Length: 113
Image 1: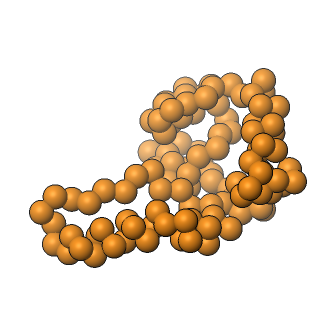
Image 2 (image 1 turned 90 degrees about the vertical axis):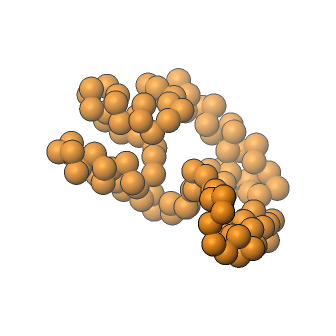
């Protein structure tokens, strides 16, 4: 969303973001699927800069790897990797209410503005 906005698009026009990403692909060393893949190639010295969540840097630092996470001046949106409701846990109704709110178009619009 941020790239779309920076490139003249927005919520209703994501094409500028896709165009920007396509322009960057020739300069990308590795496109990884899992954060564990990123950690491995960083520890091997194959990658010295990456786009990832702030948690990866702290984890690497705790293992002695010289890592630092920097938020872009445009902002760093919160990204959740997944949301689950645990079977037979208390407050099932509240958990379902939370998920319904979280995934509602109204909340997504506010959360990603």
